[in-house]
Image (cartoon, rainbow, N blue to C red; front, side):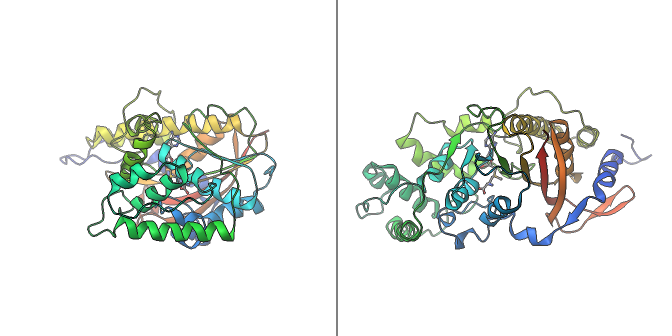
Length: 380
Ligand SMILES: C[S@@+](CC[C@H](N)C(=O)[O-])C[C@H]1O[C@@H](n2cnc3c(N)ncnc32)[C@H](O)[C@@H]1O
């Protein structure tokens, strides 16, 4: 890291990231049609997916595309999503009649994903008092309904709405929606486990036929905060389940509030360069997030490689980032980490830009964090 004479602003080293961008430039295909599939914006139009709006979700259409066209996918083996979130993969797989296995750190999301496979429940007693309604919910199907109504009193970041509709009204809407979906298209069991994507405990080596997932993006969302209103209600009924604070320790360290750990650093020139630049800008907390994020993601890639059958396809939706004005090509870094973990690259598809206005990166112009679909294959 060098400094311009007489100026306090550190000059950013870009060499490793410029080289990385140049290495993949030719293989990166612009696929704007993917832009709509990497967000959950249209999920409110789809049965079962519309129950819970999770702004970090991707579209069930992407799951259908994977089932239809992912080369080498063994449809008889479970389709794995180690970062299941609102359960898009597990739910859509159940709709399509293919086996799947979701893994998610946050218990309340696991519960709500499984709830799609539950039969209809009795109506709850009338009233708007959350405590009274919570006490009246004896069955998982009833609990799920109250959770989904409660979710509608909050925005997509988990903050209370200024003027939320009354719970009784929201419960009626949720009940009508669930009844319509169950009647139109009964669903079997939806398979998802509470767990840690970095370990994938309980999944046997080579047992999964494909992987479709979207891990947390660098410094984007604190998922524990987003689900806090639901988790506190859920914890009343299931105090023995993994509590939110414990789940925070499981989260990929993608956010400033993530807990510190002592994972060994990932050796990749672009990661080292980003960390050095952030330290030079005197934002050590951000440097630590970057260090921990890639270390965690490497563990998750290693775990995924272990449980996938040889030759199985793996599609990963991932976004880049800009932290303290330092550009982080997280998509390409993960791609090269994946190669080290036993994956071969099939295609690199740019779905959309995450920031307006590209910047100069050494000799390159117009460089901005992207949202990318990495199409990989577990090496045989
Ligand atoms: C981008 S969201 C996935 C959204 C999902 N594709 C969907 O359609 O709803 C990432 C998810 O990973 C979960 N997560 C973060 N760290 C995890 C870990 N170590 N193990 C399992 N899940 C984790 C977060 O709680 C969050 O729900």
